[in-house]
Length: 425
Image (cartoon, rainbow, N blue to C red; front, side):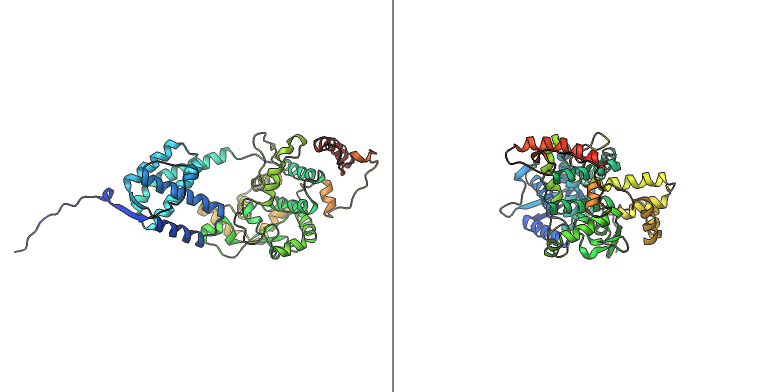
């Protein structure tokens, strides 16, 4: 006789637990570093967030500072849904910024998924991660500086002042000039421009090729090949001058314009170091980290990218070209990832010829260099100065006297440069 019955099933997922060891995590981190094109700085930060989470799993306490690192001995970790809930609560109590909170949660989600933890567990983190990310984007929009061409001109003027004060040797100065003008011209990320090689440049077509694997959108979307960006007229002259002047150094760097091969930290460049060293020159007006025209933010190298997008829109409105296709072109040129399918369609329809047409019309002839920089790179013939100021040798704009204290010389030089600049204008 066949027996018929009903068996009651109970949902018991919360009682499930996953166990793994510190050795498993170390192997995972090593594999992640080798299979992802990330900087050394990013990887250190990523590892710190992972070990912070695992220390919490072990102790129930959220540690910070230098104590966050891999354990010296083998550790075992038990992950449950309850632990993840408590971890989110602990992060909230610490009052991390939304950006910091987003990075921490993203790191844990990546590790749990690669370890094979159920998505139902991961969902515990996805809600708070989504909220933190939305709040982060809102903060970014509210904190975006308002920039103008005058901010770029101020940067190049101050860079010139550092050279006149002999804080930069000529080759350093021209290298910084070339790097900055390419950031201004292309609107690309610092980490992308710093990886440009001689072979990527084509002066005949006004273009620079940026390998897609070096770009943020290329890494996210798995895009191969190259992205094409353009140079302003001033940038072309600066770049040609830089290539002639620093030819030997570039050859030693295997064709890289601004870095040595194998450099891992692409966000900390030689120009960042120059900017940092200039901060003690605020009183001379030579601090490259100056307050921009909005009166709120201090200039950072990454602001050239924001300036590109803002100035593109201003020029488009001025010339009556403020349509969706022109705005889609700036997203494509700068590498902003399209936010929806409509933008993706627009991207596909914009050809290289159209991109150049818009760029030439809106951006190619914009000028941000000082008059002396323009003369130096050969863009115009040197103009004769009418009646130069006759001054004692020790007070010459380009000279320094070893017997006079540096601070007094620099203060005097600032006054003289103001007179000198007035004559040129």
